[in-house]
Amino acid sequence: MPVLPHIVLAFYLLFLLAAGWRLWAVNWRGVVKLATAFLLVAPMPLLFILPGLMRRDAWSGLLVQLGITLLVCGMACLAGGFSAARLRARRRG
Image 1 (spheres, helix red, strand yellow):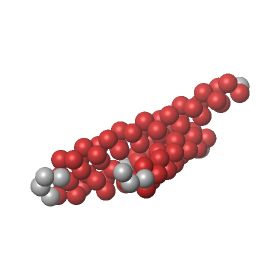
Image 2 (tube, one colour):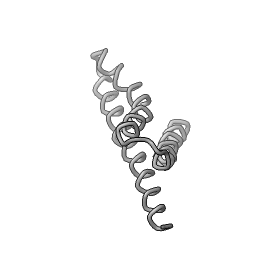
Image 3 (cartoon, helix red, strand yellow):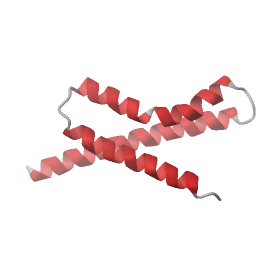
Image 4 (tube, rainbow, N blue to C red):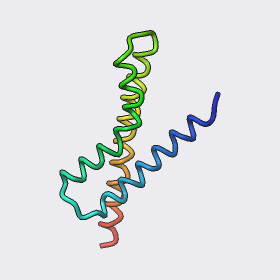
């Protein structure tokens, strides 16, 4: 089984975790933070979802499912970084 896709996925999810952490520290309005979070999460899953929706063959369903899974995991990692930074800030006072 190839190792490089697992490494790329791990870097993507760790990047989103760190981005969520940093996004908490920025003094923007909540709407701007949500838009930025969506724009950080969306590009990689869209690389799988859009080709799956444009072509109808045996692999298109798998591509869409993989893209949706990446989207959900990316949002979870971003929210995890956001909540970890919030909890740490609360603990520090």
